[in-house]
Length: 497
Ligand code: ADP
Image 1 (cartoon, protein in one colour):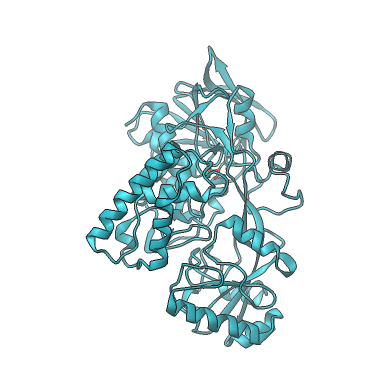
Image 2: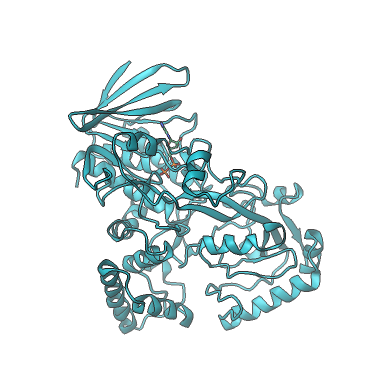
């Protein structure tokens, strides 16, 4: 069967739906999203919906400390890796000097600083033009999502591996917070969405991508022709063991993943078959704080994904890492602990009836997934940790919160003390989470071939692309990237402003 559309989008996660909604905003466009799984939403539906964006208004309540100032100064003055890096440093410096002049006591932030941290946090292998495009547009994306009904909370925190307090969250079960408003808008605007339809290959005519061949769950074949090319929004390859092992042989094949089973790198396979280039395919991110055994993100006590009020201890009840570390550093530190796992420890101040995945926390406690006790000593007994050690660790941490200084591990993130029972312990272990590498794109989301030339009619957005997150993606930069570049891809494909 053959069908014709103005625009064909492959994949219904955050990137695909953002592209579809953007493409149909002004009406008059015939757009289809094809999704191979029976469920709409991809990994975006499973994620914690942490969303990074510099947002001075919502960040106003957050204080700027000396250690945070040091971090900015260090990044500005470091020897630049290349002229683009030097320019980015100079731009941050100008904004920082203006900030100092203003006399503000609130946390310093701006798109340039977000961009520099993204670049540095990815070991300076990301592409600065892409990173700048991302950081410059991301607050606009957040406002846009809010205008579609995403319930953006006023509280900004620091997600795991986010490196700065610019992580937004939503007053809705994680994942749904983004997918639901996007889906509502897509339906309202007449986007066609079909599930159980797997794109198999791209159709190229006279050097231009003009459609996709697809197969449904019964094995029937379809052709979707597209007047304005194809947007690949097929996500990453955390669940494609062959691709994952080939790219990152340091990962063992038996490792669990936070990802949905459809994250198998199909877009990368289809596009490279017609000559697309790839970037950073060897960079695969492991998330430090997932559920041991299953590898899911769920099952935790706290409402927010931020680690502002959480410490992590090993089976001896001792801290072993700064909890605001990069994810790869955190994972490396956990792997050295007994049983290669740790416990999130927090008090009742950040626990609400339901956690950020809409799970009832007391049910998780009664099922033995989370431990809860009125005293730290009882909590320690429940998890088999020496009570004296856990008490001493928390007492020491509380002093550090007062002093805003952690001489042992260098934590910079301090908010509340851990002091109000009941106390909670959640077992956590690493799990494969995000593939930083993918198709090479330019800042307009056009896919480039192996020689860096634009492939006419082919666009890509989201986790299927490479080059933004370098070797290590900052926590909270994924939903923000996929939605931002989903919008850009649609605008480029249709020539919209
Ligand atoms: P992103 O965050 O980049 O939007 P997601 O993982 O949220 O990525 O979404 C990607 C979606 O693309 C998933 O729902 C996945 O099942 C879908 N997908 C992957 N490969 C194909 C394919 N070959 N055909 C159709 N859909 C696909």
